[in-house]
Image (cartoon, rainbow, N blue to C red; front, side, top):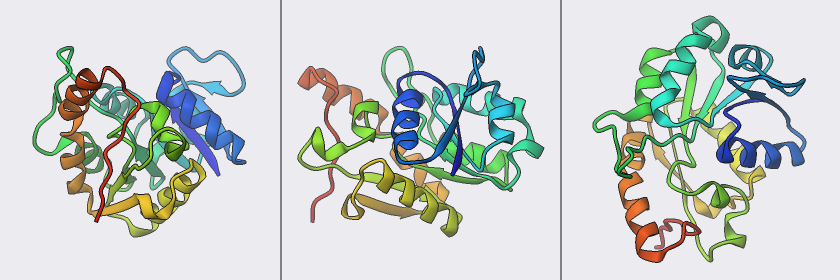
Length: 198
């Protein structure tokens, strides 16, 4: 697939490198484009089939508003963002980032995933921790199927993926940010993940 990764920090770089290694064509959207694979956000999105918002949650809507409805169209958008305050608490309550994006861009097929973990766990999670779960939320079933396929490319086995249902369920996973940082402080390490066992 042609994938636009908006953001060139740890999350964007980690996801982009892994997806490239699995045969996808990745273009990075950057505020400071510097080469053939690092374009401005709008150009990266226009040239791609799928968009990944590897940005801080507080910046996602602003960046997408600058890109605009026409460029986003009915593309699939994977949102792994988290909105965290300087005090490492979850900033948004209620509907959360993904729901706000879906409301603002109703044609775009928004899927929330990968927002409950450190970037190192997003790829090949079971090489870092003995058990891990990734949650998926979205209204469009076909879009979620594509994202679940991408999660497989990132190293997530089917048994570790839980489809929570509609995009409204993303608000629940977005609220785990405070828990994530509390666990990180207690362990003195960020190489961990939530795991559902049954």
